[in-house]
Length: 385
View 1 (cartoon, rainbow, N blue to C red):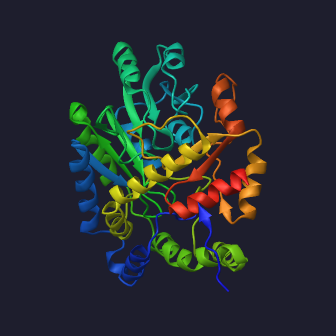
View 2 (spheres, one colour):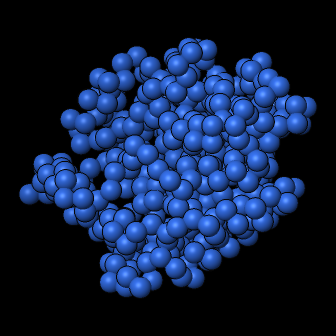
């Protein structure tokens, strides 16, 4: 009997056989888990790729954002503008600095709406966090013009968008700073990890960013071991997920604390360990191939579903669409062995001042893109069949 592999946008879609082999190799060398040259190599890759004045690594994207706020002296009493359609980790990182997040509505691309952005600027506004949702670039010309007018810092949230371009320029190079995530379901994955970068025009902050990082601790060996076990475990979990065995293994490993949870209830910024940097280097070498696949699959979805036209500079970490009954669509797909995503089915704005974000949250479904064309056909069949 042939067991059908699960099709998913969230269960380690980036992991290939060589990533599993690398995790196995590294796990037997605990002396290299915390410090090592792979950290420097990963930082140098980002510095060169983005022509940045600094690229500094951390244990997560949320840690990278938290430290960037410190580096730009954003603190108590300040306000930071960000879109309401986002991951809760973003406003939570802002609040940890006793900074007030001010939520802005979105446009048709699920990105921050420049018109609503300007309406919500106050005398306390210090920065704008610009998320490029699902790998689709935001309206950067309009946003940067507003930032210049009001003398605001622009921090690009590139958790979804490594490799995307806006009018020929790489995302992550347009603002004053940027941060990236290497989570288990991001553009490239080392299970956990993040990078903060600072542009050449803000290089005076680079030294401060590095000094803050150097004062942080490395994660424990136990935590690092959990992350290294993740790709190894999923090599067995994913092929058997559709026949219950994979689900049982996943739950058992979580209960035994052999694997960590993707979204812990609290966090404290830490340094990026060398063990995960070694996984990252393998992934970075495949970035362009991964993004070509994502763009091709997104183009197929667009053609089949007659959805909104694609953005030529986008890389489509996930393909987002609005449906009448997302819960039913997700249930129907699950019956076919397909796990669709629902980033972000809850908005983070409690004031209800962002109606388009509320509407998107109520109807959003996102389709996996780092899959084969045959898998993409199955996804379409699960939606239309």
